[in-house]
Each structure stands twice: as C-alpha cells, then as structure tokens.
Picture (cartoon, rainbow, N blue to C red):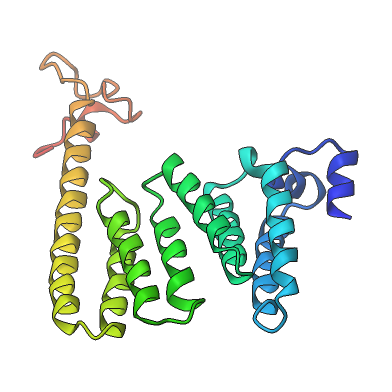
Length: 230
C-alpha cells in the first residue's frame, strides 16, 4: 500500500512521504521497525530472512539515494546478516567487502560483519578468530567511526577466546582513546570559540555610547561591547 501510494504520488523519499501524508515520522520509523521484526521472526523461521533480504534490497533500490545514511547502513547490515544466516557466507562477505571498500570508516559495518561470525556461527575458535580479524581490520582504518564500539566487541571476543591479557590490554587502549577523543573535542570547542570572537568587528574608540553597537546585536554600544569589562 505504501509503495503504491508513493508511486501514484511520484514520491521519491521516505521523508517526503511523511511530510505529504502526515506531519509525523510514521513511515520513517515503520520501515526500520519492519526490518527488525523480520530479523526477529527469522530466529524461529529462516524463511523470514529471505523476505528480509528482498525487503531491504527493494528499499535500497528505491530510496538509498534519498534516505538517512544510518537507515541505509542498517538496511545493508540486515542484508549481509541474513545472507550469512541462510548459509550464503561468501555472498555476505562479498557484500560487506564491497560496502566497506566504498566507506571504510563505517564502524558498524565492521561490527556487523564480525557479529555474523560471533553470533550466527558455531562459535568455535576458528569462527571467533575470523570475527576478531574483521574487527582488527576496522581498527586500522584512520578515522573509523564508532571506534569505541569496535574496541568493546573485540574485548568481548578476546574474553570468549580465553585471552584475558589481550582483553585487559585492549581496555587500556580504549581508555586512552577515550581520553584523546575528549581532548580533541575540547580543543575543537576552544578553537570554535576563538573563531566566533574573531568574527566580532573591532570597536573604534570614536563610537558614541548611545550609538548602535557595531557587532550587530541591536543594542546601544554602552549596553553591549562598550560595557565595562566586555
């Protein structure tokens, strides 16, 4: 019904549909909830994973270029995961390789691929090592997004593999990474504040106290940049 309405109204995006038919995010939320419902149903009946693949592929075909990037990424993860669960592991691997070649900084892409081996396999030593290798590749990518979550997954993997020393070492690296990110964020905030101040016009001593302040605030100079201590 949704697709028929979208076609009839020549709607090209989920956001446009919600804006035109209801001032809410009904469809924006629904299309994601339905993907998750198909994944949950697949836990009891694998046929739902094939339906999940077809649904997500149709979504990407129609709306990938006009949709929120996170939504698109989640749909891709769902496709790869379902192929893996259905036993088409080479297909899943080729898709994740393709998507991550296009965007190596997609942190949850690395996690999603590793999760296939971590949660949807026999979980023997060989499978866990494959998951760890994928996460390690993700950590090598400069500016990879959600790096802290990749670290967390790898810590869990090391513990499952009986490697507590490696897990402890990685926790220390995680802590250092968090401190560096906090310092980087603080530095960016300071630099942004300096940039804002530099944009304020220099005040001439000849400006009358009752004249409009040159900073554009609309206040008199004496009530704005001319105030004592400003």
